[in-house]
Structure formats: structure tokens, C-alpha cells
Amino acid sequence: MIDMQGTELDEMIAAEKKQVAFEYHSEAWADGFSDGIEAEILAETAISTALTELVRRHGEDEVLQLLDQLRQRIVAGEFIADRTLQ
Image 1 (cartoon, helix red, strand yellow):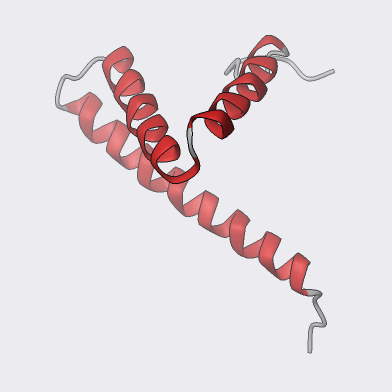
Image 2: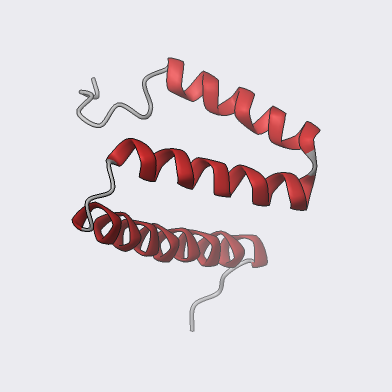
């Protein structure tokens, strides 16, 4: 029997949920793209939908903090699709 701490199990469940969510988003993205919707429109709509839901659930201040963190990750190059890790 595998002995896992509650935190480890919670992290594994969260990681699995993120993977499934990524697959859902990828499928929706592919469907939209195949229907002729430009990538920029898909991206902007996804961001707007996500921000609306996050503000509704967590409030503006917390979402602004998240956006600051995302900005730092963008500046660090985390979201460059073809970046080379050294």
C-alpha cells in the first residue's frame, strides 16, 4: 500500500486536474481554430473569460497580484514556446 501524506495527495490531484483542464482547453482551441477563428481572438477570449471568473471568485486585488506574477513569468521567458533551456 502506498503511504502518501495529505499534501502530496492533494498536489497529485491538483496536477491531474490541471492536465485534464489543459486537454479540454487544447481541444476547444483546436475546434475554434478549425472553424476559422484566429489565434489572437481565441487567446483574448480565453484570457477575458478566465479573468472574469477569477475576479468573481477572488476579487480584483488578488487577481491583480496574479497578473503581476504572470508579468514576471512572461519577462522571464516562461511562455516562449520555442525557448531553449540551458
